[in-house]
Every structure is written in structure tokens, then in C-alpha cells.
Image 1 (cartoon, rainbow, N blue to C red):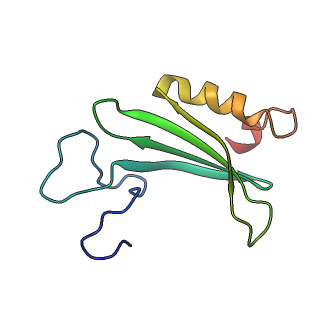
Image 2: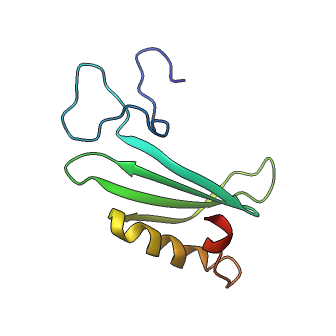
Length: 104
């Protein structure tokens, strides 16, 4: 929960957020979480960002150890119809196999 008077960086799944550039009296996050998952040390985060150019994002992080700082491996900004193909291509790079079958 953000401090009083501050806006969270990303809204939770299915919660209120600023889907457009029109900001109401109560500022809301401009991004909303869609889905997350993990395969071994890689974490996958899907989210959407509002505004005139409403877009969808996939961020892939590698978190090798429990206290390690995550390294951003891939960040893709795309349209919704391209999100699944981009995800499938990005996930092939872990060990050469099609990991989307394991995650979906």
C-alpha cells in the first residue's frame, strides 16, 4: 500500500486504474497487473499501461538467489493481439524448449 497521498506504481489485477489519459479527482496508477509466473529463476510479469497509446507489456526477470537483485532480461511493449506470440518467442530463450506449454 503506498504512503498517504502517493499513487501506487501498478494497480492490482481487476482493480481501478487510469486506463485513459483523463485523470479523475483521485489519481490512480497508470499501469495494471495482468498475470505473473515463474519458471526456475525466471519471473514473467504481464501488465497493461493506459493512455492514448494503451499498450500491453511483458517483463522477464532473472532472480537467481533468494537475496539477489533481479536482472531485467526482456521488456516488450506490444499490442494485445501480439502479446501471446511475443511471450512464446521470449520464453524459448531459457533452455531452447517451448516453455509456454509449462506456464499456461
